[in-house]
Picture 1 (tube, rainbow, N blue to C red):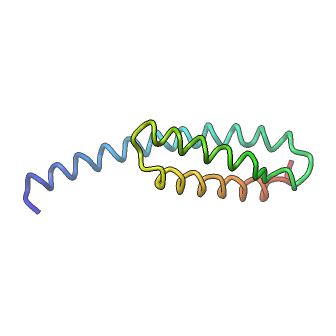
Picture 2: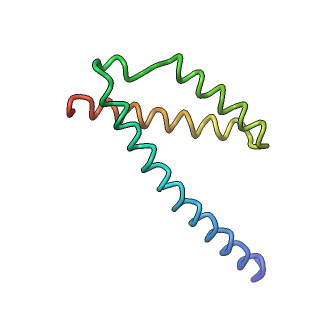
Amino acid sequence: MSPDKYNKLIKLRKKLDKLDDSLIKIIKKRTSIVKQVLQLKEYKNQIIDNKRIRLILSQIKKKSINNNIDPKITRRIWINMIRAYIDYEKRNFNKK
């Protein structure tokens, strides 16, 4: 790799690091809201709402297409995020 390309790579990685910092703040906010949602659920079987999951994934696909983002990328991100929060809710359900 040429020195010029290497320097560009370093700059781009720094931009990605800044974006990651922003994402961490957003995830913290999202987790706070998920905690509030969990407080409203009375039964563990309310944690997974397949109808809502399908709706979310459908909306994400539309938004991705409208924003010129590969919908396979966003679908995979959202599925993993949904799974992570389902796991979080299951682990914290009895602790309320």
